[in-house]
Every structure is written in C-alpha cells, then in structure tokens.
Length: 247
Image 1 (cartoon, one colour):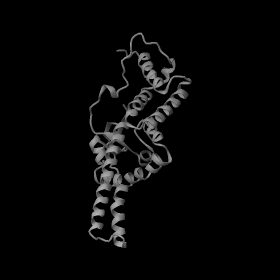
Image 2 (spheres, rainbow, N blue to C red; image 1 turned 30 degrees about the horizontal axis):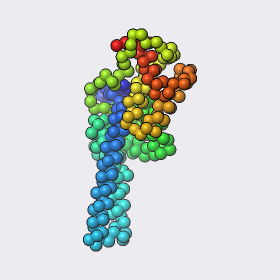
Image 3 (cartoon, rainbow, N blue to C red; image 1 turned 90 degrees about the vertical axis):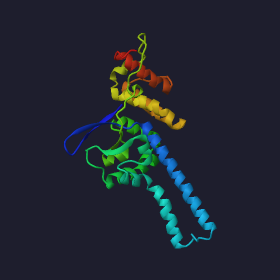
Image 4 (cartoon, helix red, strand yellow; image 1 turned 180 degrees about the vertical axis):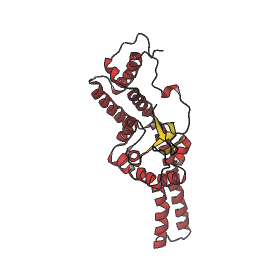
C-alpha cells in the first residue's frame, strides 16, 4: 500500500494513502456510464425536438448540438474544477486529486492532467499507464507527474488484503532466493497488479502482468519458465517466507 506525504502551506506534513489502480478504474467506469447516459439522454431529447419540427440544421442548431456534446469531452475537467478534484466516479470511490506540494490544485493543474490523457491512454496503451502508476510510488500517471498531482483515498481504513503480508507455510522452500533484492514497494506493485486483474479486460490484465514480470526478471536477474501468474504469486510467497512473515 503506497502512501504519499503532502506538505501543506502551513508546513504540516500529512500522509495520504494513494488511491489504488482498482479504485481509479472503477471511478472511470462510473464516469463512463454517466457520459453514456448523458449522450443517450441528449440524443433522445434532440430526436424528439426534431420530430416536433425544431430545425437543428441551421447554424444556431449546429452550435447548440456542438455545445451539448462538447460537455461530455470536458466532463472530467469540469468535474475536477468545480467539485474540488473529484468527478462523480471519484466521489463514489472516495478518492480525489491533490497537489503533492500541498497547495490547492489550480485550473491549470486540472487542465494539464486532463489534456495529457491523450498521451497516457492513446499514445501509450492503458497497461503502460497503469504500470506507471504502480511503479511510480506516488500513484502518478504522466499527466499527474506533469501537473505535480496525484489521486489519494479519503478514507483511513486499511484491509489486510491491501498489505504485502500473506500467509506462508513454515515448510515453504524459496523458489527465488533473489527475492532479497525486492523492496516492500516492489511487492506492493505485484499485489496491486494481481488485484487489478479482475477489474480490467483479460487482454489488458495479461499485458500488465507480462510487463511486470519482465521488469522483475530483469531486476532479479532471473529467467523463468513459470506462467506470469504463477511467477508473481511465487515471488510474494518467497518474499514473505524470506522475511519470516509466516502464518
């Protein structure tokens, strides 16, 4: 579980739990459903208006249509600006955007992280964006790094499954003694990748796990024939066994 320390303008340091990738994905799904519902509603209303004789083909009608549909494009930006760093999806998941330096995010900050979604999602695959958030340690995608922001949880509750602890049998034999090179942050990333797998499409989940496996193989200096899932799960068990965290 990653945390980020925010230095407030009063020089008070506050620790926040970084929002998990699962929370951010679920928030995006909620927001996506809202946008789809908005499109359906607008399209239905416009269809009804056209049926009763309203001419939407002239310049005024085109401007109205453009204005109504452009709202969806700026949905996230408008929500974060006017809802204190939250969209409806983020509010539902109890997460929000904050500035790492402790200042209030400006419109420019929100705009920068919004516009750079093009880089995060379109130029790179979502798997790369997710992995960047996990490895970064501060929950930042490219847009967040540029805007000096991150997304944090507003709740203080911590569940055991969110930690790196995992029950390991006392007789467990290390498969990879190289786990001594791993840090707690590395294991947090592994667990987050495995936990995220059920929240995204199977193809994206597999790409995310494969990229994580490649990074860890390089760090540990190993090459394994194990499946990606088995390799990641084995590393968690080996790490806990190595450090004496036995059930």
